[in-house]
Length: 319
Length: 315
Image (tube, rainbow over all chains, first blue to last red; front, side, top):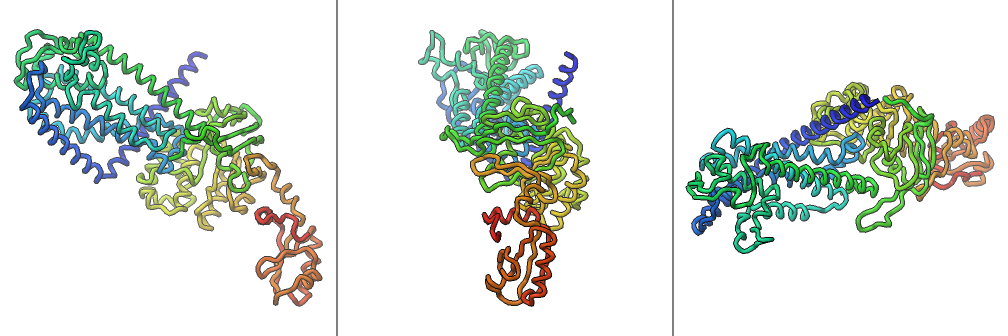
């Protein structure tokens, strides 16, 4: 009896994975058939990189010592790369439900075992591939030219772990934003606001340490709290991984000079964390995965609830 | 294929469906109280005036919408609690349900085969019989309405479901294609439970044995066999006559008292076959009629009379 239940569960999981792969492939094929749009997105990313590098260069002229290892140029160019992928992925994904409804495909998908959650996740994965290609071709070359990249393989591995943290968090966040379209049909502005808040709170526009001297909460600077917001942690960690020479730079007292020729304090001493080497064994990374796991579970439950309400109200196909 | 847990393929009891929006919690009631049972293998037409909830009923039964109240079982499975299992065993095809137009026909079929966990064989066989396989590598955005209708059916037939919900599946098809689709359903799907909505009574007449009539407000008016339904007509034969000149009421009544005038023709109604023979003899020997044609009444006659609200006109 137990074995048969187990086999049934495995069969269902395999079927769900097949559905996810099929939805992702379908989205990818469709995306790459709109070649003009891809060109425009690549051009938009290039303009962003240029504008933010110039903004960073101008800011750096007047910047005081920040105790951080990166210059303002690095600050902006990493944020631009990071949000090229994640804003692009989120903006592409949040329209998934309304697009399917406008095409009239939602009913056919749902009655053929493709849930709105599968549609959203499939679209998110395909959008990651699409925006990943744009990032690799437009953003990575200037980073390499400027010498902003991990110094060794271990730090490259840490970069991938940090990317996974950011990707999973954004998946949960996008799942919530997109599912709202199952009930409320005009959500474009809501999506923009949501994405903008995440960008700002992540320190994409100003360093999260900017108000540390003026804003103290329970005696601790604001950045010590903001660093627990997964995208803020990911973006900060990326900047550090790209500019410090060794992983020891995360936890040092006399750190020397970074690749941007700036003297800096250790990551832990600035943010009040206890990170070690940004691997899976790092207690900070483990806590981040725990936070994200909880967030993902909440996102999935919410998306499932909104799907049920939309089937009940009949809004699942409306646009 | 699952083992049927009930003698009925579809059991619906006091089904209610209300559409709501965030600003309208009261909502609009589409189905008020629908109750009926369908034995496995039956072929049923759902009819009723516009807005009586025909498509909504099919969408609820196909698990797209959740009912507000009532008990529904599909192949013995609870419509609400076992929706996922039900989806593996039913197909819903409707012009309102579409596929990704940027994909080719083959890419669309492959996608649905993967998500349905089914093979492409049934879809290809259907496309072959509809002579549409030459479009397999074409993007569906270039398809005509008829070709899109065939594509929808191919997707619906792919998983060899026990129950088919077919909503206006012949819409947009030319006469030949419509004939091909009807023949395919009759020959290949005759063992399936089929629920059909179609405004063409010829389609219903040929494919269905039972009719479920919904009335405004989402109630079941009645459910009966097509034979029983036709028996409610006050005549069994109809003789369509073309007069050589315009005849007045008195002249027509002299030929046969039960008639209706439609355009330039006169339709005489006979209760029995022998009455029909009498009418034919009278009208052809009268010298007023140039030609006449006799036919047994079908669902089309019923549909016309219902739509004109004139079931007993001429009697």
